[in-house]
Amino acid sequence: MGILTDEMKQLIGQHRLGFVATVDRDGTPNLSPKGTIAVLDDNHILFGEIRSSNTVSNLQRNLSLEINVVNPLSRKGFRFKGAAQYIKRDSPAFDKLYPKIHQHFEQWGGLKERVRGVVVLKVQRALSITSPAYDIGVSEEALLRHFGDHFQDIVHEKLTELTAVDFELVSFKLCPFVQRSVITLLQKQVKFRIRYVDLSAPPDWFLSLSPTKKVPLMVVDGDKVIFESAVINELIDELTPARLHPADPIQRARNRSWIEFGSNCLMDTLHMTTAATEEAFRNVVNANKTKLEILEAKLGDGPFFNGADFSLVDAAYAPFFVRLGLIDHQLPVFDKEALPKVAQWSDRLLALPSVINSVVPDFPELYEDSIWKRQGYLAHVLPGADKRIPVQGRRY
Image 1 (cartoon, rainbow, N blue to C red):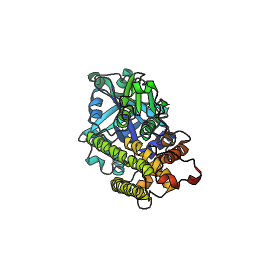
Image 2 (image 1 turned 180 degrees about the vertical axis):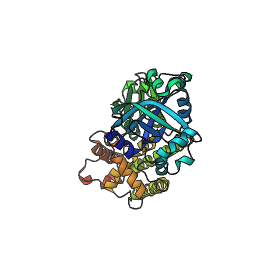
Image 3 (image 1 turned 45 degrees about the horizontal axis):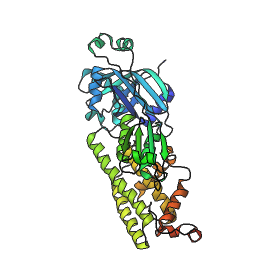
């Protein structure tokens, strides 16, 4: 009887994307690459699309490999561990294997012409998981059984487990930038704490921690203070498994550019709430519409910004869509019919548990109250605005 059950095969067949872990030269994990995978038989998985050069070089030194396959909605899946074999495309071994895998190449759109080779994982252990988490490594005896004397020529290195990191976020309840970090932590199922401060009367401990006297802050391991949301999110991503940033440096840089673009979109929602007149409000709405049209032209088939994979770009835009939706509930500012891809992306993000749970339960009421306190044009179209307690001056 094989190791791969029908349930495992079904999950691989449905999602076809595996989070891959190999062992770097220094014994540390190489967690970034992902790849398209398929079932070969009851005991073997094909890793067919190699996106990281480290994967190839690592496997040439150490045959240990782990592939995590996770349902993106339930976050449940399986961890497959064992010994892998890298097979070059232009080799007799590849020609012998090809009749078994040619249908997978057709599904992947001419992959045979693009890859340098494939990896075949002989699964020796399969474990249930609730999110991608890596602790790869198989025994030397298992490798010897699988590869025989050939293993004697391979350097065997042990992957050390990732050290747990203590994360504490400091912010206030309406901060959209800390919400990005909360989404990232929830999406990766990382334990963390959050402490809210009143910025109108900041406590001394906060003033001593924050170089800019602003939020958000991330306190790592109790004494290391990091500020600026984009930097905080990248640090979270680098210190925890299942990377949300692309492995390719050019694509990673492009994602950073779109994250910055998302910050500008987010600021539009702030300006919508502070615009003093209807004309000023409409000017901001039109400026935001132009940005959304740029996004509409950029987006693919989804469901996320980069396609199938949730990324830090998605974490950056979700707070914007949360606020845009609340404003649109008061006055039309988001034409979903004219922006179907953006609308689909927004709906997908807003349905994620990591986004739903990234704000306090009374967030809509707090946000509406903040609009009223700013006393802009939008404040006076809120439900029951004529019965609200007047605010002395405008608060931003």
